[in-house]
Structures are given as C-alpha cells and as structure tokens.
Image (cartoon, rainbow, N blue to C red; front, side, top):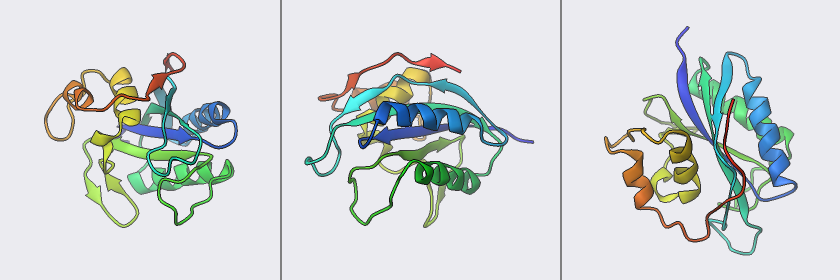
Length: 167
C-alpha cells in the first residue's frame, strides 16, 4: 500500500484552542492507515479575515497516510465537526477547529471539494513558518526551497507559543 507524506494546517480561535489543536493531532494520529510523524510549535496569529474576532492558534502536522486525498479530507471534516465546527458562508470567520490539507505528497488536484496544494499557502505566515519548522529542506511546488517562501512572508503578529514535538 502506497503511503504519502501529508502536511495538515491546524487553526482555532474559539473555545480552548490549545486543547482543540492537541485533540485534533491525537485524533489524526488514530485515523486508519495513518500515523503522525511530526508536529510544529503552536503559533499565535492575528485573524486573516475580519479583525473583530479572537487571535488564532495555528500549527502544522506531518502525517504519513495511505488514505486517498478526498477520504482524508472527509475524515478531517468529521474531526472538525466533532469539535463543534460549523461551516458558515462567512469566509475567514471564527472557528473552533480548521484542518486543511496543505500538501499531499506531490499530488496536484483542483476539484470543487479540494485543491492541492492548498490555495494561498505562500501568503499565510501562520502556515509557512510552522511548515518550515518541521520541513526546513522542503522544495515547494514551484521548485524553490521553502526558506525562500518563508522569507517573503510578513511575520508581524506571528508568535511561537509552544515547542514542536516529534511523534
């Protein structure tokens, strides 16, 4: 069975965000045909959308899985829902838990349900910095090193709150 390295972005700004990120990592590690290989530090960041909401906690996890991309997406959505995630029309609004597939091996896809690599990844310091932390030698989809992508990020308002862990 073929296994892929998959990077998942985690975010939360409602409820006990630290505990929600911790629970999500544990639950992802228990998915069928999946294991957690690494987890970044937790970072605090300003909201990307409307500013009248709490700051976010963000992290990135590295999974090894043989689940297909859409199967994994549906499992992540189930975890979000179990932790009170409500999908509303408001883009970038507050949420208890947000789990995004950032990169799924070298897979590229663009469907109504899933875009890989995740759209907008390069502009999101709260994704790029934790991703760089656990994969500092990664070559990004455009062929450039991740360090170059991180160097282009605006790091204002991003702060590391906890150390990273290897699973």
